[in-house]
Length: 259
Ligand code: NAD
Image (cartoon, rainbow, N blue to C red; front, side):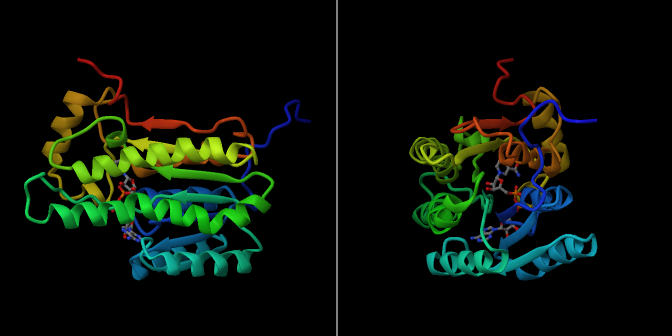
């Protein structure tokens, strides 16, 4: 049947760079994008699990390159972007997903270190990767940037102020760059995941997760990482050409619930 509509919902052949791809939502995003035909440039600090993700994609017929480094290392970011862009012949999509969560009460001894590391990894790394990839995004006919924020970018939980402050900053970065890069047709959006079963939440006992979800989440559960990856996929579609500067909660109704 001939199509009546005009915009494409396919990322087949698009070149997508995803950070934090060895676990959780980054891994799920890599698998989903691979299933949709994207060519993948995957980054993570942890080389071994990253290789396992890449092997799984290759054995399924997907195309993937990897680089293991710390996303807060500006030189490494620049080098990896150039290597990926040369290999694939460009970059169309950047997903800034890598993240850590360091609990830090305001009067804790190591608060300063937690603050610095949180800001390095959660926010400085995002602007650095965007700046490194920008020449390639500018050359793309539908460039897309997705930053992973959090519901901690919209509200707050005690004892995690470095994380919460950095995630609020992710939303600010996203909105400002959406305005700045909008003139060039590059969209910049962010996802605010709620509670998700990933490496980051692994240490929380299951009964505590269930209790939290029962009290706070409209859908009464934690999500699986792939459910968030579909939110990200929606932002990077060529058809999503008029969506920019959005902070999208993918949180099972956590942020809209009053009682
Ligand atoms: P995860 O721990 O399963 O995965 C994070 C990945 O990022 C890991 O593979 C880790 O090695 C990598 N990483 C961490 N620091 C890095 C660095 N400096 N350089 C390169 N790679 C690094 O956790 P996740 O939950 O999938 O986290 C993905 C994103 O989602 C993060 O930005 C996190 O803040 C955010 N988030 C998570 C939740 C949740 O409930 N899990 C909720 C809201 C937001």
